[in-house]
Image 1: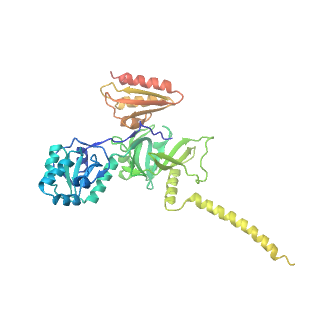
Image 2: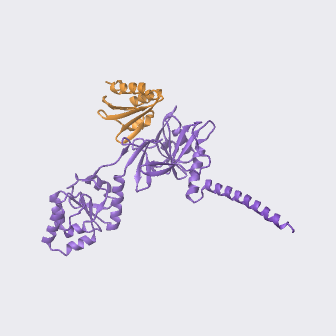
Image 3: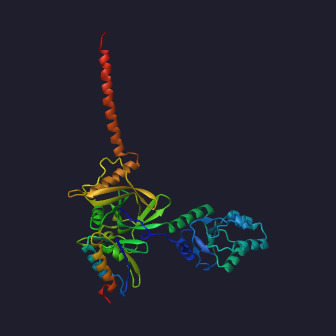
Length: 338
Length: 88
């Protein structure tokens, strides 16, 4: 089973404004109006805020510790104030410990804003994107940065587009199964150390570590580079995790599913994922079985649940038999001439 | 389950040779051996995993041993760490 505790989970507590700017600069078409001022500040909250009410003077519940986004509405409001009023507004707003401010839609921030922000050591950025678009981008970026991640020992392969994670004790043959799947044209995401990142509320994205990438250890051979050996089509960098398969030696006392109706799930970072326990036996081709599991998953995804279909057929057949019996009783009455 | 904390003491850190030896020692025993560092959970019987750590001098690692022969395994491995992978 997968062990998840504080030792293998990680969540960023904060990111620096510098990291945010350097990473997101090109993606969000950002430019800085305050040079490198305020780059050492930390963003500790993944949410964003539009400081409309705070600009108007209501600062009671001002979530100042978030990235502040100033759009057309805020700027129009500021335009109709005179310079002294604007100065007052910004002096009140920027006394708070704001991580950074982004002005959207290619607008230039008011002079008063830039000069007071500079004094307070707060970065002011501008973006070409509209407020709605930028809010989405920044929200998604921060969501990803602050997402919880967990590191798991296993092999992660994309089989027919289905992300399958193989887990099990060391030496059971996870890497060998992965290698076999790659040989059959599937794509390796990561071997040995798999890092799963929570994306949104119900998606886990798996990837390898920077150092290992697509290297793999095969017992008896040593280290193998899958990318150079099987080519670029045999790898991918990230994949959504969809099924977890635990390989284990055949255990007489354990019960394995026979019909597929009893779907087991496993909980990782509060996300439920289908979980299959696969016993290993001599003569059992785990690779082919894995492919079948992936295809079955795809069928289910497209609305065809094999186990359910079979169950329905069985039910139908039983129902017909009982009906036939009823028919016979009626037939009996028909032939009963009185 | 036994849990230990060790520090890398040799100058070169946990590079290829000690990683290979570490994995070899770990694999002699039946018990599961895991290394935890910076939110990574590494199976100590896997060479790639151990090398992923790229643990430098002075870094601290948490070790866990679980299985029928965990005591002997823990002793030999912790000893190997403390000897600085025989590079001191």
